Amino acid sequence: MRKGKIALSILCLLVGVLSCNKDDDGGGFTEIPLRDRTEQQAMDKDSLVKYLNGHYYNASAFVSNPNPSTKDLIITALPSGGGVPDPDNNKLLMDDVELKTVTFSGANYEFYILNLNPNAGGKSPNFSDQVRVNYEGFTLDNEVFDSAVNPVNFDLLNLVPGWRKVMPFFKSAETFMIQNDGTVDYTNHGAGVMFLPSGLGYFGTPTTGIPSYSSIIFKFDLFQVSESDHDNDGLPSYYEDINSDGEFTIADPEDDTVTHDDTDGDNNPDYLDLDDDGDGVATFDELEQKIYTVDTNQAEEEPVLGEKEFEFSRSKSDGVITIKTVTVKDSNDDGIDDYLDINITINYNI
Image 1 (cartoon, rainbow, N blue to C red):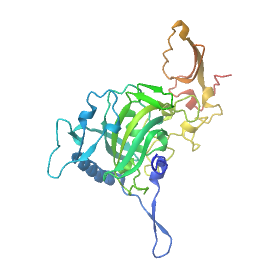
Image 2 (tube, helix red, strand yellow; image 1 turned 120 degrees about the horizontal axis):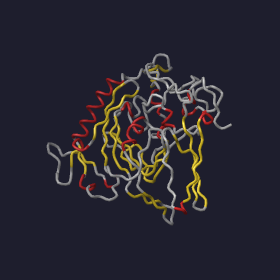
Image 3 (spheres, one colour; image 1 turned 135 degrees about the horizontal axis):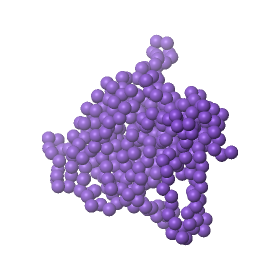
Image 4 (cartoon, rainbow, N blue to C red; image 1 turned 135 degrees about the vertical axis):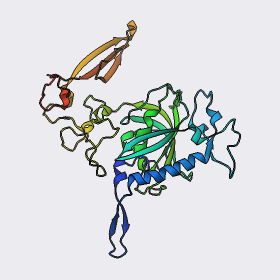
């Protein structure tokens, strides 16, 4: 991976840090306030639209391609004063990208995606999941600032916001096979490009190879998805996003109207809190557990999980699969799940 630890692994929390300049008079540092996000988004939109209208790609390489990859992708600037060369094989980016919108840190954002394999056969990640990808990040000037040519694993929560907004629109590989040399061949995996305004990238935080307030582009191959349960309390992390905004927020310094994802107010967001409601009974114990056994030797099928029922673990021995699940309960039917209701202290595991 090229500069991967410098770029993609920067936590999204760093995006909100104030930039500093040396104070020529006092020899110290003065804080430079971040730009207004809405005003910056308007400028970024103009830059992205200009790029998309000024570049084309080899679209025919992805028609009837059984296993498309970004390795096949070629993005080229339009010739001066001319249209798209060889239009039977090439297409203007603006004609094929999809416009998406999202609200983040109090601002309304527009971003674009190019799906190179809409028929990928796997599953889509949630915003809080782990993904296995190849990728390349570059600026609108086509300067590469980050890349990985071999598959790497990322927790989407540790990446810039744009990745969390884009990945749910793509799917992982349908199948994979481990070869004798240890390499993995993926079949029918997700592949695409994201075109991000600075507010969904690094915003005002200067990063190696990326000027502050730069719109950026990532092309990527999505191979595998792993559902995350960061605190191992039985609930997938995405389910603990209380306001379903695709972010985990304790307090947003840029927008005090944001609903927080910390039920008991202990400054630990629920997805990292072992006792979400602070009632003294662990979240895991306020969930009802169940065990299923599936004998594949008898051609038994796996169970269809019920509403608010989640797989916690599974094991397999001699063809018998053991699946443990947890189910969210609301014992007093007040509309508040037991694990979030401070007035309910039922321990289902006693």
